[in-house]
Image (cartoon, rainbow, N blue to C red; front, side):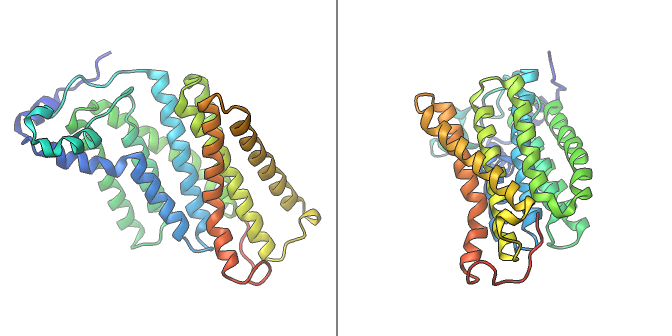
Length: 312
């Protein structure tokens, strides 16, 4: 199946060789490491009143990773057999940078960078409070466009790939937005629950693909970590004891079961690196999600000494 439209050849004929480095840097705005760092920083820096929105963005980002993993396995379409600039034509000093930023492997349709950029930046535009809503959405649209252009310009995707990635990202956000808006006091829980659901679905086409298995563990761990975080906040608000509240009991039970399961999979399947790694990654995700709430609790004098916080 050919997805080429012919735009790349025209661009390559006029683009200078050094542009591959510039495009390689721009494309990092949609790379997993950068998006994870960005969303993780926003989550940790969020105030208690806004951490539910940050948690929802976190959950949607993880869901997007599972979504693109499953879709790539379903379509299994190769990347273009082309490059913007041959590595031997570039100065040797930039060869490591070129390999790290301007190359790609695996299936090409749809574009993961385009899909993930759409989900993350538009979600941040919706829930952040910097500037006006219009300014945030214009900035998000600009970044998504730049990242998508960089993928086609580098020759690692066809134009159809990035358009499909953006469209899938928009459809996904439209579907989950109604659910998140319907239960605004539970956005964090819903966001991470969506991540778990999408991770389970992605396991069907991806089967034993390591990325899908690892993301499943990470989704479970993040969901459990958020339940623990909300449990701590509820106890701070004087909602305890745990045994006297069904919601607190349910959160504590679910979080405990998930954490124990992840720990057991790490220990029991140490000879199966992917399964053990999935459990370990899940435990790390749980700790990452819970830590900022526990940290704040320790620095406000312990449980029960602050004003009531909204339960997510």
